[in-house]
Amino acid sequence: MTGFARGIAGRAVDVIALGLGAAVLAPTFRHLAAARPDLLARVRHELFAARGGEFVSEVGAVEKAAFVAKMLGSDGGFARSSAGPQPPARRQPAGVAELLFAGDLLAAEGLGARSLSDALRARIAEASCFVVNIEGTVSTESHAIAPFLTRRGLAQLARYARDPDDGGWSSRHDVDELRAVFAGLPRVVASVANNHTLDDGLDGFDRTLALLRGLGHEIVGDARTDEGVVAIGVGAHRVGMFALTYGSNRRAGADGCHLQFDDVPHRIARDRAARLVDRLRDRGATHVVALLHWGHEHEHEPTRAQESCARLLGDAGVSAIIGHHPHLLQRTDHARPPWVSYSLGDFVGGDRTIWSRFGSMVALRFGPDGAVSGELIPTVQAPFWEAQRTMLLCEAPPLERAVFARFFASKLARGSCTSPTPRARRDQREAAS
Image (tube, rainbow, N blue to C red; front, side, top):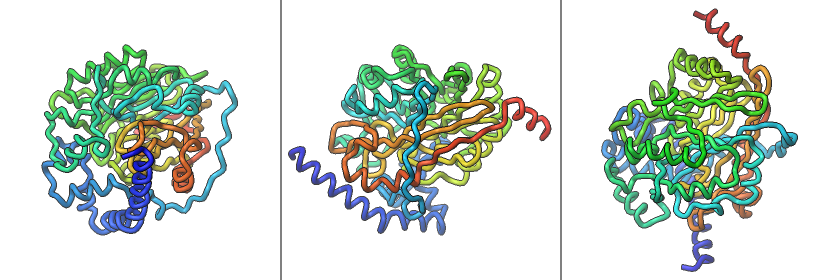
């Protein structure tokens, strides 16, 4: 099939997915959420992984089909959104230090320097530091699961029988390809607390950390060293980060590698959160950012448990929360502290179906007394029938720019929020006790 024919066929798939999602899938899942939350929970594999179970071996054909339906698309949350177009964000004056956060970087076929557009690279280069979730292991050869992009992936999806020891299910980056992706970008902090970084076992995790450090990247999320936290200078401020994940695909040997939630749906004890924040404050952090691998795959909205967890983390002194894992862009809340971006979606890689190829970056700027301001920067991946490439929304083809203008407007939130000073936080906790 020629490239032109693939493009026409792919656009037809997009239109069908949009119509099917709006007319069938989205109403069905909303009905399940309201009427049968127990059934909805059966298509959330994270609940199984958190207790050491295996989703594909514990549920039936109906639940598996429902999970695939979520992957194929819904309505993007349009029915629940009344947001209209928003004016473009005002760019921060030149020279103001910012941290730039992206979502999941998944193993994809043929990664390289051209995987990021020139305009996207230029925008990332404006930041003092770039923070990204490395969703997978790192080795000297790549292996992308890619369910919709390869015959192997389609066969795995059709069987839908996951074997934890089957290397075919490992998400693995090639170190040279990653080097090319990050070439010319600012300082990189790689988050490794996610469900895929143990896909090659404990030896593979150690290899991943060594290769990432060999690229000059800093690591956050290895709980065996320094409690999985990192503190870096950003302009006049020092920003501390810690990373948590809901679980891991491979349980054997995984204990202690990552900081994990106390329970899924996502909960962390207040005193434990406070200890993480205090540990970073003791290292001079003026602001604390939590990197959370949480939520449920292919769902457009965070859960109430996540909202409660975000409030608790804010009370503990966290200035901002950056989330990933659902493979979809979810909303950002900033009306009151902390700044919360529930999911930034996929940055690079993934199945790149109609919704999962749309994501965002977050540029955070840090002010005195815990102030945080931010800007969301929409990104678009090329569709699955084209070579891997991530670009800014303004560079995307007309269909993407037209269809997703309202989608992004419903997810964008701009402004600033101020948290109490570190001393005030501690005084509040001491008074409460």
